[in-house]
Length: 132
Image 1 (cartoon, one colour):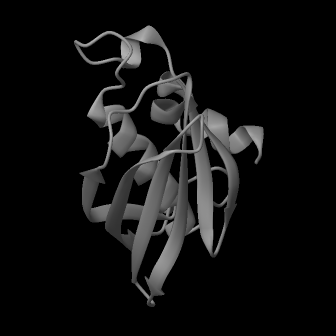
Image 2: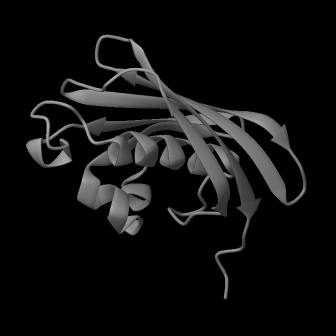
């Protein structure tokens, strides 16, 4: 992980998402939970946070960033929530299911800080050039 990757993705920085590992096989992304990440039930993490950390892990894993700039965009994604998410940290681990020249199919599993799987997501990503 480089600081360039963290600083160029302002949305991830705003939410506190960090990339722990990324390569051509997948990605590990984490988020430290703050009270503003909760839904209206105190202590339960909003599903949008869970979905976002899964999407980030799949996007980074689909096509590793170049100089901190993303090389893929989400075409579609789906998530299954298995259990309410609670705690201070979520970890999303993605892996490539199928990689083509332009399209990559990904899977991500999201875990709470105790290692319990709380969601599983799939997504399709398209490779893009960061050059205009």
